Amino acid sequence: MINLILFGPPGSGKGTQAQRLVEKYDIAHWSTGDMFRFELSNHTELGQLAKSYMDKGQLVPDEVTISMLKKRMESGKATNGFILDGFPRNIVQAQALDTLLEEKNLKITALLSLEVDEEELINRLLNRGKVSGRADDINEEIIRRRLQVYKEETTPVYNYYAEKQLAVQVNGMGTIDEIFEELCLLIDDRYTTQFVY
Ligand code: AMP
Image (cartoon, rainbow, N blue to C red; front, side, top):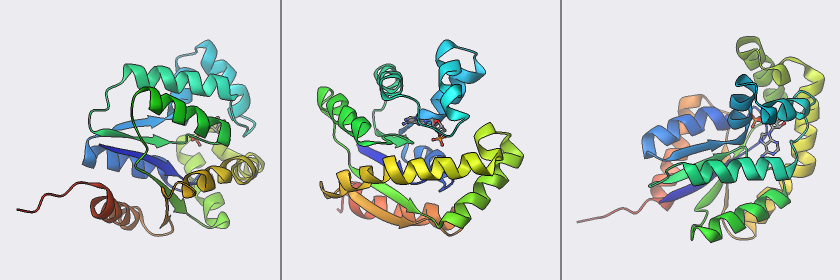
């Protein structure tokens, strides 16, 4: 099993790389941002609640986010493992994840952190906004707010896993293919069990 946290600021390529990794390693993809957008497109109460935070570039409250993820983890299959994308985003969520995984007798294999310069992040997000129409990618002020939230609330999560010797930094500045290749090399080298006959 490979149980990964794909970590990094908004615009660092987590979603793009996660999609490719789940295909290659046949593992589940759990993106809390995608879950909220799904709820939103289905006009659920949870979607409406999440929108009020997402539109401002703020985090959705922990209880809401954790219980949504818990439900998804319990109903989904992850025989070969999973990638968490966009979660945990603060220490409370990291601790809640520990509890959730303990209950299931599972462990995080690694946290892979995509490292990208701030100006590059802003450009990528503004460009993505033109195509995706995501409300939180269109406005530069909201983008800066999200990056601020990331710095203040989310970066401590890296240290939380670094203390457990589980955090690894990956250069997130190249092309999509280059970054994917680097992630795969790392995963194959360190985390998949290789049988040599
Ligand atoms: P993302 O697609 O991961 O960039 O998430 C988009 C937005 O969804 C974020 O700006 C938050 O408002 C919300 N969101 C996603 N994941 C979380 C999380 N783990 N905790 C709180 N809010 C989240």
